[in-house]
Amino acid sequence: MEPEPTIEQFYIYCSEKKLMGVRCKDCGSIQVPPRALCTLCFSSNMEWQRLSGLGKVLTFTEVQSAGYSNFQEIVPYTVGIVQLDEGPQLSGIIKHSESIKEIYVGADVSIEFETEPSAYWPNWPRYYFTIIHQSNDV
Amino acid sequence: MAKALASIVSAGCSVFGKREGLSSRELFVEAFHEALERCPDLDPRRDIKASFIGHVYQGYEKQGHLAVALADWAGLTPIPSTRIENACASSTVALRVAVASIAAGFYDIVLVGGAEKLTTLSGIESQDLANTFLDFPTEQWNGISFPSVFAMVARAHMHKYGTTERQMAQVAVKNLSHGIMNPKAAMRKELSIEDIMDSRVISSPIKLQECTMLTDGACCLIITRADLAESFTSIPVDIIGMGQSHEKIGLAGRGDLAIPMAAVRAATEAYQMAGVGPEQIEIAEVHDCFTIGEILAYEALGFCEFGDGGKLLEEGATYKDGRIPVNTDGGLKAKGHPVGATGAAQIYEIYLQLTEQAGERQLKNVDIGLAHNIGGNLSSCTVTIMKRRR
Image (cartoon, rainbow over all chains, first blue to last red; front, side, top):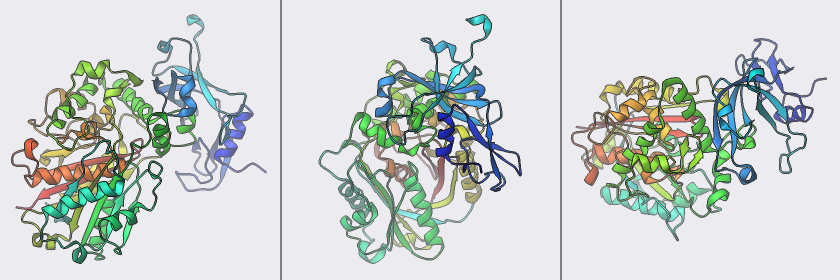
């Protein structure tokens, strides 16, 4: 039997290096993070669907003053919202080289996963995005 | 024009800022006392039948159950007293619930307000708590803070419409130029566009001086059934339209990031209920927690076309002497942001202006005003339309 479509399970999949959303078997909509009830048609007929983790940056910001004690040590860092190729939008950290200039609206990104769970509650391992470099700009 | 849903017959507001040695209940009494002094015909024990209190953060002064504590300090025990939480929109949502309770016939006269004590913690400790109103699994967990959320919306707006960082900075310049006329504002100091642009970046493109400050503060309103209002005041302010709508809890779950749909829907509901359009609004209070918030508000409220918010400001239309003055009390930028009291304080300013009690910043001949109050990462919005009775 498939695991329940919970946020906890979403992050368990992240620890297995998989970005998993759910697909509604009745209306076909895809949502991430997963939900047990389709917010478009109210069906509970949801199945897990692996997502490619590929997408484009819709917007981003470079955080220079962290809003959280757990993030103070890593400033500056960049966060953004990515439109995934399968349709849903997902926010997250976007890792990049020294120059913020390589991030722009429309930049191609792919998902990666931290190898260790977080040291603090709820100990989820984080996903993050990285910029996909075109072959000619390496 | 539509009939009154209920009426404001008095209002009071504490001084906002770091109120050393005073708790939220004491600040609430400061606001309540002002409301009583403005309304000598009100006998609080005889007349006030319920209270609806906006309050958000219990952690700063370790005091929960605040509506009961405030009612106690205001001498209103044992009336039904209820706390309402809807992030930064808490006290205007409390107002809506209060008006609905009057419309349903439960009460004739109620107290609506908000109170917050937010200066007991500072720096990162305070921010850890403040950011709990963002989506935990996708935003908080990824280090996305309030400034980051508004920065991402600002970037989307800049990308789609060409809005500039100077236009956003000008929001703070304008509001601070109004705030120097407000003795209750926490920040009474004018800054130039360069001062704003040169302040340090918090989350690009948002700079420190584009952010409001979390402050202590309290505010209250006395709301009555419309037909009773003239027993308490010669100039009732009628509430003629109210809208409330929401967006998904996480910013990423929405469609076009440059259009705040909760505000668009709340405005549409309020205008339809009131039977007025944006061209009839003579004064507005809008939620400028970050400067981009005010530009988004102009567009959502129909003061200009989508994408033209920055230009509307540059033309001077929203200055005190402009076509549609916005945030004559200095907005959240100058006043500060005692979260649970912020919405009620917007209503307070409209009440003062419509009843010619706004002192140095008083506008001439204003009859219809609007308040736009945002909660969370633009996930909540209320719009309230008020009209002075003639």
